[in-house]
Length: 267
Image (cartoon, rainbow, N blue to C red; front, side, top):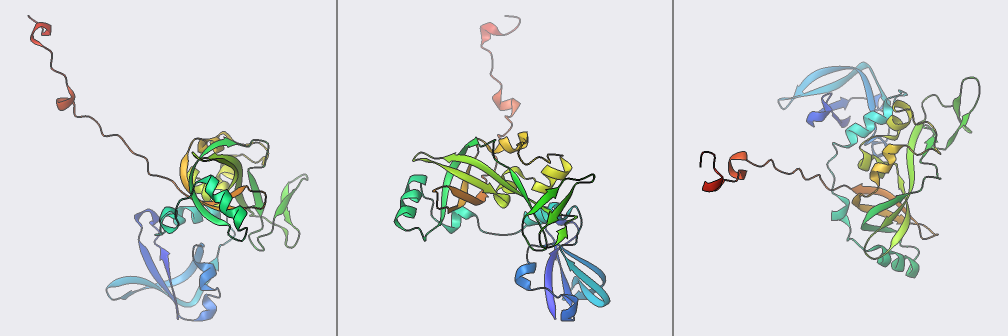
């Protein structure tokens, strides 16, 4: 028996529902690879276990991990925001950029660090996204023809490729600055928009023309999970965006300033 917790259809309510697969052949995927992916399931029945509703497989049940649908990346991004996880700031101590560079020079085998920095520049002459094959994870290229299409060297025509952010920036803190590439997960966290939506839905299909939306990360200060590279630049893999502080609305009864007697009407 294989059980998997999946978000309920009403994903924004943060509900979960358990699906039980009674035969391993109905779910031929490794658990570690399935977590965080989108699962399409057909032909299940609703049952009750310990007063909770659940789904059970039937002889007709099929399960497809990451089905080839255009909205795949958007759905994965939406559901990933419901995950309960520790923030990057809680996992590792924050180090200044200058100290990170010094530690990496002393020991190049240590590449993972966490810092708090601000994006000060966007490098406009570099590509801001790349495209991969969802099957082999290799990069694909655009074959320009009467009907343009994406092609993978190993798997041929890719009808629904995966679009991934890779935005080149400069980050800075009080100690130093560094070149940093923000990759897909970090960019989605900062923009709250998937690369698929940016490219396909918003129509920004040229990887060498940086859309205005990308520049929204400039000036943002976040806690960053980074990996040092041999050229002393940084790869930003995850970020912790501080919550927006909404100012309270002043109470007009308490905020009103009383006029002195000489200024009062009728005096």
